[in-house]
Image (tube, rainbow, N blue to C red):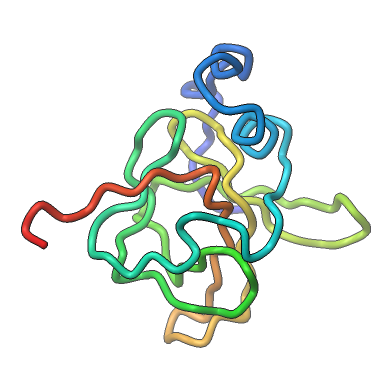
Length: 137
């Protein structure tokens, strides 16, 4: 898969156990998934940046967000170099997992069925993200 090799940046998951909620830890470091339509950022329409909840790396700009109807925040592109792509054959499916290139935290998956010109749908757990609104907004 394309993407950066996060080995030199990868965090020790245990360092996050006391810094994240139990549910955030499950999603980010045990590759869990939040319930569809439950995420706090699903319907966020504000301008700003979406950051990794662990290391605060900026991963997505609000202009890349769209409503895919899948139940999780969706983006048509990540900021170049911020996401690592790994083949995921768990749960009897062939998917592409996305992780933060800086710390290795699980974000979600990317699918080649997006409706925009990129053709991509980054399906991301709200629990893996923080949102920083634009200061101009």
